[in-house]
Amino acid sequence: MVKKNEKIKQHVKKTYAELAKGTSCCEATTCCGPGSTTLYAKMIGYSAEELRDLPDSVVRTVSGCGNPTALADLREGEVVLDLGSGGGIDAFLAAKKVGPTGKVIGVDMTEEMVQLAKKNSEKMKAENVEFRLGEIESLPVEDGKVDVIISNCVINLSPDKDKVFAEAFRVLKPGGRMLISDIVTQGELPNEIRENLEMWAACVAGALDEKEYLQKIRNAGFEKVEVIGKNDFMGIVSSIKVRAYKPSN
Image (cartoon, rainbow, N blue to C red; front, side):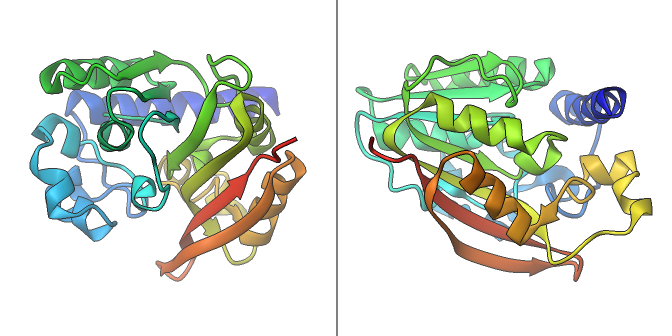
């Protein structure tokens, strides 16, 4: 199982490294659109106003299934953690909302994406954003340091979602909240899809049944776990927006 999980991670990293370098148009039909254009970004929930001031190097790497910052109710001064931050679009949008007294930390396991996000940050002079190389199953973040966690179509890519949610719970402050856009299934997928590495990178093979996905969040200790948005996708999977809270005590 360990060897299989590592094989999945390496394939996903390779796919998104190519996207970061611009050598792949990312032909997946769920977590990224053809070329990841502005049109695709608008399709999954980003407004023209949000996209207007972002450089093309940010928008072209959009590979999500929603806009978690639009639903996270971010406030000035909050510390936000973006799981799987990619080229940085959600981190930059969050940074505007939390302002100079707040901070956004983006974590991504693909070195090329982290490098790109840092270059994007320099272009935008985003002083309250930091990008760190690391895996979401083992976050390079201290305990209880984060007010809000966001994530956009990334957790489905992890072969160990229990660890992801346990880590999210660890780094959140008591009373902190988590807002996720992700892909789930409405039942079990065929084995030929589950075992297909390309379908893992396409955000399909790693998707869990919706009920199982939500239960894993609860098992990690979260409360008030609720689906606040849902769209059927391809007739196989659905994109959902989930909100959950770490208990205050």
